[in-house]
Amino acid sequence: MKTSTSRPRVWFLLLVVLLALALVASACGDDDDAATTTAAASTTAAETTTTEGAGPEMEACAPEDMWLLYSGRTLSNPYYGLVDQGAKCFAASVGLSGQYQFVASESDSAQQLSQVTSFLAAHAPCVAVSFDPHETSITPAILDAVEEAGAYATTQWSRPDDIQPGVGKYEHWAAHITFNGVNNGYDIAKVMFDEMGGSGNIVALQGVLDNQAAITRFQGLEKALEEYPDIVLLEDQTAGWSATEAQAITETWLAEYSDDIQGIWAGNDNMALGAIEALRAVGKAGSVPTVGVDAIPDALTAIEAGEMLATVNPDPPYQGSVGLAIPYYAAIGELDLSAVPTETRSAFHNAPLITADNVADFLGDVDCAKYEPAWQLDNIWSRVIGPDTYE
Image 1 (cartoon, helix red, strand yellow):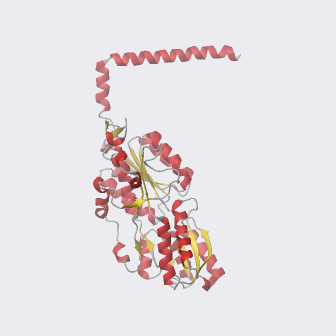
Image 2: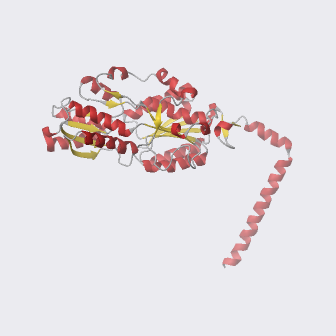
Image 3: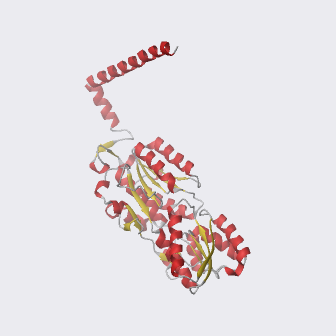
């Protein structure tokens, strides 16, 4: 039975192959049709020209054919709202406002991968993607999808230690933009410990545990604790970057430890603000030093009001704009990635500490003009301060 059914299938496949070869030969022999087809292709939405900047045997997209995608966690987090605003600033500057989209994973790695691959399926190869992986472990799968589609991508915050742009198989991984999490976690801890007089008890709110930013910021807290032996960490928990979760956890801690909590360290501003809400409910907002990271508007307002002590400014609009600008320039052939050192493409960018002393410098709405110099091609790496490696 098996032998008798296989022969017709083989002959059918051979017939398909022969017909395909005949069609190819016919097309190659018809110069007029080929010329017409070539002329028509040059006017389609996928118009491309060969360029060295796009890599060996790659083609560059026409700027007007580009699509821009930012993939982040959720727009209900003000940090991502600012990222989105920065991305929109860049999209408008290159005439692509209608071809930009922010997709929110809502803290679901599988959904993030699905959203990115769907966008690529609709618009690739002329796509520039910037994504902040919900979990570090999802990064290779998204990069695989980008590479297969022929698009270009920038990652932000999290990447596995064993891969980086400029090294290995991901030729279209344009850059990794991040900030020194150890230093950020250390800086906010140190200013809080000094405010506490160098002694007392604290609690700590961590972000998503499989996330490089969360891991390294907590390492910064641990580093500071080693330098301040009279500071005691009573307890730490993950609140998943969420203000709501952080508020609930802090309420529990306040019920358990009460006045024994003299400081609250949070891995981001969203969680710090959740903790401040819990402190407000018991009349302690402003009397228990609280710190975070991200410099979102409500955190800056809280610092100005004396309810929050400090934050670090990774400048979300900068991330949103420059994070798309780098793969955009690579895709249109204006940025030769092979000429950019690996330690520049995968790097820490500067992020200043903000306290009551300088918070006035960072208040106000997003001003696109403020960020425009940073996304210019000749200035695209201006905020790089060193390779993203921890010693």
